[in-house]
Length: 394
Image 1 (cartoon, helix red, strand yellow):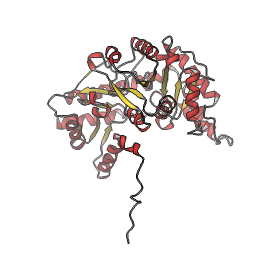
Image 2: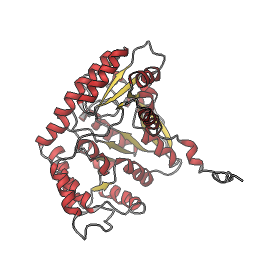
Image 3: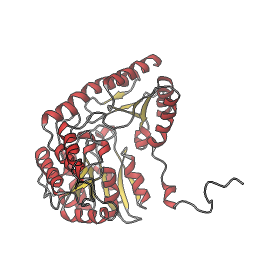
Image 4: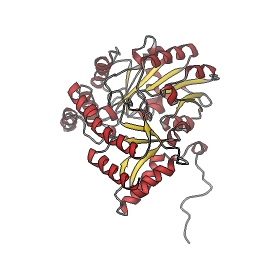
């Protein structure tokens, strides 16, 4: 007799009803099936840098991994060498002073940081402010942890910056965290000192914590800002800075969190009960990456992406999309023509007729429902080929 694959009397936790499988997890399965059928899909969807880290980063990893004593558990707080390198990184590039012993926390990626910060600051039933459009994980992890979401609008007429008049009219009862992300993903809006000043003032007056996700400040951008540059920011702000994007290390899973010593203690209390630290050679290699010089960043994060960006802009024009030429970061965000009923009408046609995978903006929230996002994380030859494929059907 054929047995059932599992006991149907056993049901998943109720929290799974609040989320769906991540869009890219689902869609990449479809793309994989298309590739298996020989359709050779070009992906311009995921923000996973395709270039290697700096030579000294790789050399440090290889050298340190050969040491016999390098393979044990590591402190969850991070090794002193990495904490010092991260503090020096903030001083060099943002002119922000951080105590490496108490105001820096290395992370296994910013996604992990979203989980740990929410666990440390918000109880089930508390509210969090999430940008619309915004990174979907701000919403999904908050829901999984039992928080209630209040979306705040980012709109093109405001340059995709928060509308502080609207925020002041919002019921902020029970709000613990406000998620922000500048330079912004998916819109490419740059960071603004004026916005940071308003965010710090807003947080101090309303007794909430601003968590600014800042992984894109080096990419197609020479105006590098941190919310921690604002006086009083350490009292009420936490900032993530990922090495995935600016240092070409997405698979390494290394990021940093900077804030005041008390917030760091709370977050470490959570983190130390969840993971057992990062492989020591990876930490030492990440410390080497923090010391990349301006020439490396200019080539990797400005020159290469600028060439790709020009080709992506041609794709937008071919599709009849409009876009802000002042965008920064590793994506290009564009509004679709009004002739399409919805964005998937366009992106599905591109996928199945041109065999190019482009992200529909609705996955970032309702304010992205008339937009597409093109990733620059593909070789220029692939982006150019995608452009030619699209030209053939439009």
